[in-house]
Image (tube, rainbow, N blue to C red; front, side, top):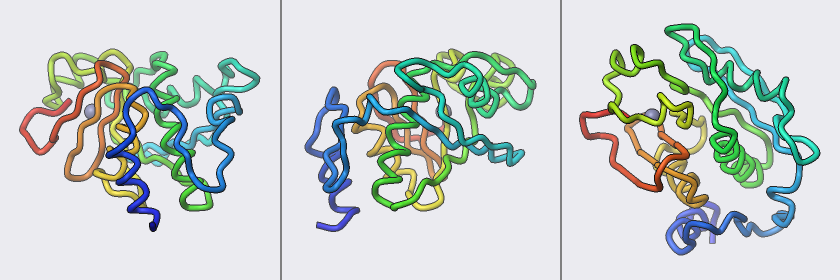
Length: 185
Ligand SMILES: [Zn+2]
């Protein structure tokens, strides 16, 4: 079974609540016990941080704030405290990618927190989790939006939307949608 087949099989057969991808050769027991690092790059500005936001069983506040900055409402220059579980979702899939690719790779962030004004301007859904600091729209250089959606879905941590050029992940209700429909969440 090649990597792609494995991912698709994994996403199809494993349900929500299973938090540890079993990947051959990976020490998955420590998936959520080890320190958690995240590499985020903002598409519009190229700002990036690659930092450990969770260390010794707790949030590393200075690094957490750096990631919140990358996920800011860029149009309004407003940074808020993002849901830590959103970072955990991004970490889970990014660490998985690192195991598959054999090297760390960044998420390209196209949208994070949105103020009401920005959400309206972006034609976001009125109840968008972006407004609650619980959502991110991401791209990856190697994996397609569909593949990223399968990774997010594996963790069962919230909403997943597949768009033509990016994937939406959030920590609201667990749900899936096809983002080629007009409304953006
Ligand atoms: Zn979104």
